Amino acid sequence: MRFHHFGRHGGQECGGGRGGWGRRHWGPFTVEWDIGVGGGRGRGGGRGRRMFDGSELRLVLLKLIEEQPRHGYDLIREIEERSGGAYAPSPGVIYPTLTMLDDMGLVEAKAEGARKAFAITEAGAAELAEKAEEVEALFQRLAELGEERARHSGGPIRRAMGNLRAVLQERLAGSEVDSETLHEVAAILDEAARKIERL
Image (cartoon, rainbow, N blue to C red):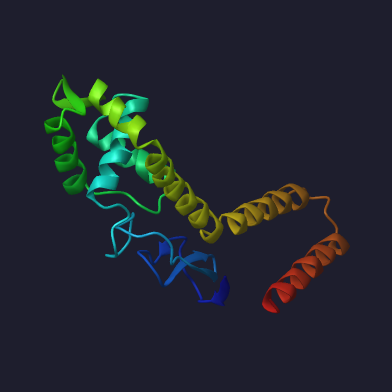
């Protein structure tokens, strides 16, 4: 992780895709982290190798549908959530795969208004049972991607900065705070800044 001073910036996150560096601005500071994890096209990501090939994606969708009937959008959102936001398959990939699963008799579509919810069939459940180890490995891949994203997303920094802001607001909000306390707080912050700079 690398810290830089960039003058005035907002709080938006930059970067994405497979490889390279991500960047988040906090006030006058920017924190960069390596985001070279996963593959495919995550939210805000660039083009890279796909997270799953066709047969693997079919198994992932089938397992999610076994858990409960789902719409196409629900499946996209669930995969994105399980990967920690690092990977989200596009509708152009999801819906043809669902159609294929339906044609194979592994799921069945049920109309719910203008949308279709897909439920697993007996044949689909048997397919999952037969390939249980492969399915487990695929979901482990998703979980590891989510964990990797969490380690490099700046989450611990955001949490620590939130704690600092809350403590400062609580401790320094009152009018009874004397100048000695203000100088002590400033000294603590200056020392923390020097330690971070030396990392």
